[in-house]
Image (cartoon, rainbow, N blue to C red):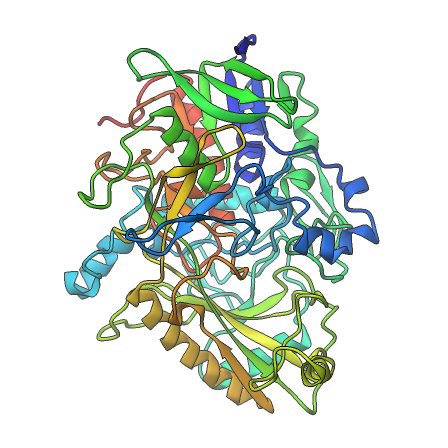
Length: 589
């Protein structure tokens, strides 16, 4: 039996990147806000102290700050006619499980989406006609434009101290920046870090082929920075161990360094870690959220009432909570009806590794997204006529700070183990680097999330089931852009190259690729094909907002984190400026 608690004004589910921003913005209005987080509290100065922050086994292999799959996991299959099986080890992606969520261990990719990304379907139809879009593609416009979201990108970038060089200031192209980006209202809050040797080699080769290299935007500070919440971040010392790890220098912008300490100042805010929300409770008409049910660390059940409920957890959990709570119509791929679970998508990747006999690099010197990139093949920045695909990728030469256990590149033909493998690892650990493609992925009728009919979590609740595979559009995209990367690689002059093109085969959930799972509770202008409106408000339950990667109708080539942050700022303003003044549906059905 649940213990019913005193109601605050707002209950927020998930203390990750989106949740902490929403909590802070609403707490500043004087509302009483309670945030429920199923993971533990993290103290960066203790938990990420040196030398323990560089423990690769703890953070990468044993997934210390990642979801515990022994209690709750997902099931996976490539196609509807297959049986889904549980994911027993962390592989393709790493949902977080601590205060701060997956943004604690992110690498720091902070690129804005292109204007094309928000109007994918309408712009594709206008330029190429309907034959360019795959027949079973369900990608759609977001219901919001880049221009509407631009002030909130700016707000998030200054909150997180993003480092970069503007390429388009109010419509004027700026030298040294990305000429393909959407117009921005002001410069980045911090300059980019100095270009590395790897970046210089890549830039020279890219320029020789007519491309436009620029520094990749990064959440690793290029200088000490104090954000608008009066929290200070340190300068990155290029010590590596960023992705999958916390930062020992306090130089990587995360919820723990940019928002949580400021939230602690509010007496009208309460954070409850180790509180696992299992259901949103509705009134008898199923038109209003009245409370959430959660389990604490002892397994005791509590009911937390509130006037406003906001889901800000990871993509899978946002969707799962809506399905478990009976909010919205579950998606049916056979009839192509329903919205909850619809339009799940991921990130298309690929890599060309360059091996040298006459050049050396220091793989330990780097950090996060310390990279030089080009956007010439991103979005619709190039003519797709006759290519048989839409979308694209940004291409980058990165200096992430190689982790010695998992970063063991070897040239083609090397045995997978034994003396020759060891010899090649030793030879090329300091004599290689990669050029990656970070590609978009469209949504399709047969790619979706639903509740597994067989497998359950430790609390007896159905697991979320993923049905997903690479599509012909993404295979062609990957092949085309990989060929362009190979041209750049050959212009640099390596002794050998190897090509890794995951989308050429079937999608595998085993090797790590990216923590960029999106969709399932998508935003849009039509309630028949979207779960939430442009303000991230549920079409069915007006006092419920759902914020996160779950809102994306399809995946951009650019990493989702910056856009999730911008959407959190947008949703918070929508609640403050519109909903609180006149509670109810902000957009008519």
